[in-house]
Length: 170
Figure 1 (cartoon, rainbow, N blue to C red):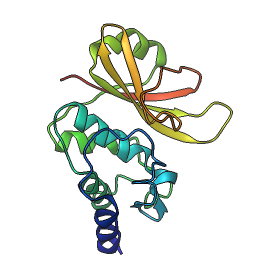
Figure 2: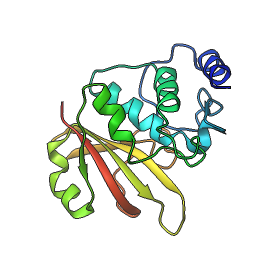
Figure 3: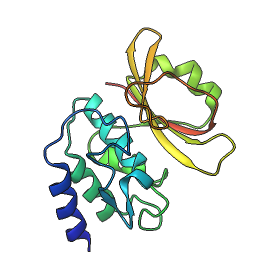
């Protein structure tokens, strides 16, 4: 089953390289992560891919997907997406040490220290959990990647329930 999903994912994706802005983008929406399609539960994998890309440690998206599945980074065979407890282990295995911040106030006060961060939120007035990235472009200039289905870089939005942030320095 896992090898069939990996073969399908590689055939579907091809050799794409660049930031991934939307998990429902035509090129990736039907990739498989565990028992679901990517548009449903792929935000954690996309966040990991975008962090590695931003830090200059390019990895193939399908390699990350396969590694997440082999190392059980997903919750309940990825039915509930990516585990926020297991996600840091992926980065540590690749020589990247995340700084984990669990309070929004602290994150806001320290955001300038980081090149890129992954934000784990619960959508406002919803049970939906979501990961997206905040990328630093300059002094007090930040954009989001894969924040609620925006087509490109988005603006910071603090109107969701913050759970934790995984922050990275170059």
